[in-house]
Length: 272
Image (cartoon, rainbow, N blue to C red; front, side, top):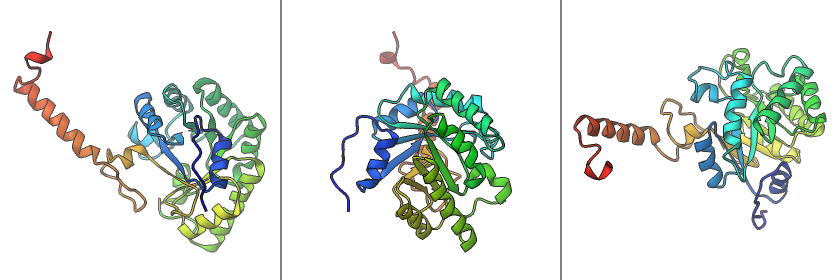
């Protein structure tokens, strides 16, 4: 049962845990630049994720793997300069934390110091436990990420739904409880069965943010280019398009090009 919505002037990790306990859903979207982050923050979204999905939507790579730590810091610092209310979480990119806890700490410190981000997000469970603990021990908030973990796409070989079998589902539950125990403030569950995601959300006290994980979790996250319809090639079941910006923008840009060609732009009122 939900209670009256609290007006948060600034979202913190503590705010998100309060939201879960009060039954208030958490909204989360990606942003990668100043202008978009300003709009997302002003609209009242609780968490802005500077996702390694920038590798896909900003740079055109097939996977999230190519993006570098320096590039993530660039995107994150652009977002942080725009934000007044939202919590800014920054993905640690592939190769910056998996093999060496000391390297993980160095990467997280660079993100916090050079971008001004508020927290970092890591993909994986018990296999990266020591890296997570190292980062947390330095006082850096960590958000976990389980289920479909795009940095491991070549291991999975597909972007299909994860944890449909009992063994993988049990491991996911165990990993979620481990993330809570070591001190993560939240966890993202990506593309897993809705009933499993709800079970996880009820079994831990930290917020569970879903993407393709049903409505029984504590909040939702989408890639902003997808939900605004800027990308018309990506249509998974979990995506709701709130606009069709691809069509609107191509129409507007086409009209601009035509107006320039016809000398309609600029007209007499649009010059000095």
